[in-house]
Length: 173
Image (spheres, rainbow, N blue to C red):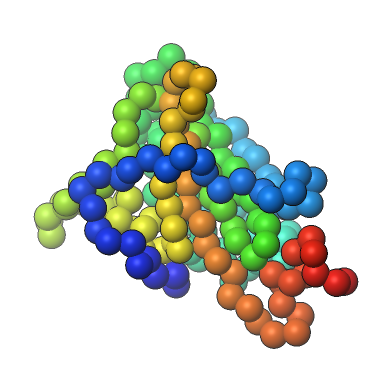
């Protein structure tokens, strides 16, 4: 499981830009539109597992499914009363990094909470930080409502048949 070297903080600060594929058309990319309904996190986990299997990145599945579950659950909870109760989940793999991006159309800033030992919720963003190599969020510069919350997992090299090499555009085949 990936660990985070980021210091713990009370507020998740925006970052200028979420991770983007370096070269359009060369990175792997998959997008899923979801309704902001209670079944969305389970559907998102199953879809993520399938996509990573197709991309031969099963070794990232456990962490990715955990991150997807937390980010989609937060988006569902944030989307209880908005005009557009839709969530967009995007996975990209480029240069050895799996990026997980979840877009909602709700105002508000993602804020990690300090959950007590007896609390049943409130740990999601802290879990995302601990399962990913880096994470953040950004609002849209054009004033479009909503935000994208994202996390990145670095693929672990596995030798000469390394998947990061196989999918890197500059690597020889």
